[in-house]
Image 1 (cartoon, rainbow, N blue to C red):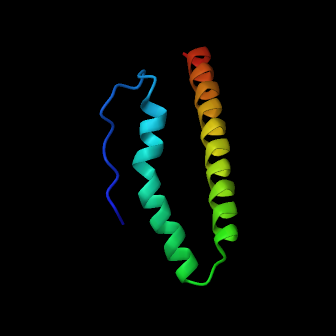
Image 2 (cartoon, rainbow, N blue to C red):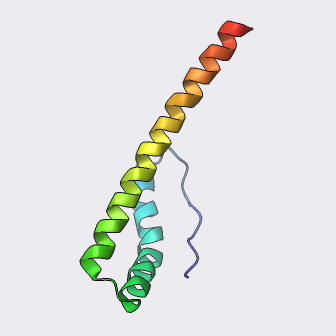
Length: 78
């Protein structure tokens, strides 16, 4: 798989999101091609990628909320 380049701009740069998309596009295309070569339909692969990304985003949000709650609880117990 192609290496993903490191960010070249700070987190608050307005172009960072677009640069991230560009950085992951070729590796993502390689994953899609590999899955299709394995026998999956391209639409299945694309749908699966969207659903996996959505699940990861939801889990990330849940984890962030849980971390905030745990920090608040720890402060109350101190």
